[in-house]
Image 1 (cartoon, rainbow over the protein chains, first blue to last red):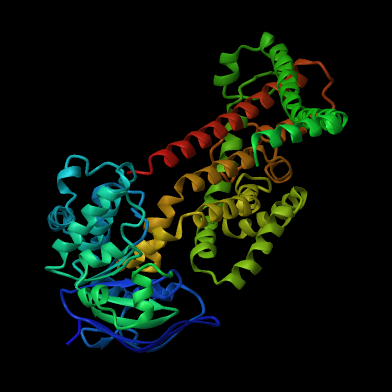
Image 2 (tube, each protein chain N blue to C red):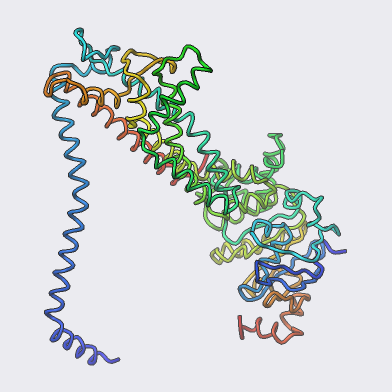
Length: 250
Length: 315
C-alpha cells in the first residue's frame, strides 16, 4: 500500500488546467523527488497533500488524494488534522517573528498541547533531529530572525517535525541557501527518511539524484515519467525526460 | 565599437549639443529649486508656528511659574481669583481621548483583522469606502451628533449624566478615529508576508490562530503606530469636545461630568471677548504649546516602537 497517492487527479486554477490526470503513489519511508521546468505543476502537486491549495481562490480539484488509503478531500476530515500529519517546509525559510523556542513549540501549542515539560522535551528532540540543537541550545530565547538563513531553514524543519508528522513535503527547501547549508539540508533529508516519507520539489538535478529513491518528472501539468531515481537519471524511457535531465530544455 | 569611434561620437555630441546641454542643465536646476522651495514651505511653516507659540508662551511664563502651571489643580484665568494649573484641562483631554481609544481600538482592530484575514475581496471592496466616508464627515457634524443624539441616549442609561459630559464626545471621537485605526492596522496586517501565514497553516493552525498568534504579532509595530496616531488625533480634536463636553475646568475623572479639554479652552478664549495681549489671552499659547509637546512626544514614541519591532521581532 502507498503512504500517499493520487488517482487521476485534475486541478484547475480558474481557466488554467494545472494538473492533468496525475496518478502516482509514494511508499512509506521513501524520498521522492519531483523535477520539471518552472510552471510544470510540481509545487501545485506537492501542495495537494496538505491541502495548501485550499488557500487559493478558484481552485477546482477532481480525482482522489489518498493518505494511508483515505481520501483527504473527504468532507468529514478536518484539514488541520491532515496538515498536522503531513508537514511542510517551504522554499524560503519562513520562521515566525518569535523566539527560536516558540517557533518550534508553535505547532504543539496550536494543537492544544499545554504541558510545559512535554513541550520542552519535544522542542529539544525536534531541534536535535533537525541537526540544529548544538548551534542554538544556548539561544533558545533569541529571535528566530537573528540566525542565518540555513539555520532558519533547519528551524523550519524542526518546527515541522515537532508536531510528529509522518510525511514531510519540501518545496525547493534549499534553493535559497548557500552550498554548505544546502549540503546540511541534504544530509538531514538522508537522516529523516529513516522515519518519514519525504516528497521534495527541486530544480537541482544533482540534489534529486543524491537524495531521492524515486524521481517524478513533470511537464506542463502531466506526470511524464516516474521511476527509481537511478533509472530516471541513467536510462530515462521518455525522450522529454532525457532532454530535461541532460539540460537540453527547461 | 572601437575606442576611436566612441571618441568621435563624443566630439560630435559636444559640437552640436553644447547649447542644448546648457539649457537642459539650467532647466534641471530651476525645477530642482522650485521643488526645494515647496519642501521648505512646510519646514518654515512648522518653525514659524513653533516660534510664535514659544514667544507668546514665554510672555505667559514670565508671570506664571512653570511649577504652578504644572501642579496647580485649578484653571481659572478668566475669573477674579486667577489660577493657572493645566491639570484640569489635561485631565479633560486625556479623559475624552482615552474614551475615544477604548471605543476605536477594539472595534478598529476587529474590523481590521476581519477585512485583512477573513473578508472576501468583494466584501472588503465595499466595506472600505463606507469606513472612509466616516473619515470624511466634518467634525462639526460629529459634535452635534454627540450633543443631540448620543448624550440623550446615554441619559437613558446613566440618569445622572450631565447635558455636557466627557463620555459622549469621547465615544463619538472614537467613531471618528475608527477609520484611522482600521485602515492603518489593516495595511499593517496585510503587509505580513503570505509565507508566514502558510507556515502557520502548514502546522495545523486554524485561521483564527494564524490571525491572532502570527499575523497580529507580526504587524504589531504598525498597529501600535496606528493607535498612537489615532490618540494624537483625538488629543488634537477640537470641534466635538468644544460642542459636547462642556467648559468646566474643574479637575475631574468622572466621564459623566462636564470637562474642558485643552483644545476646547483655546476655542473658548479665542472666540470670546478676552482682550488680545492680556495674561488671560496668553494662556492659550501656554496651553497650545503643551498640546504641541504632547503630540510631538507621541509621534516620537510611535516612531521608536516601530523601529524597535522592525529590528528585533523577538519576544
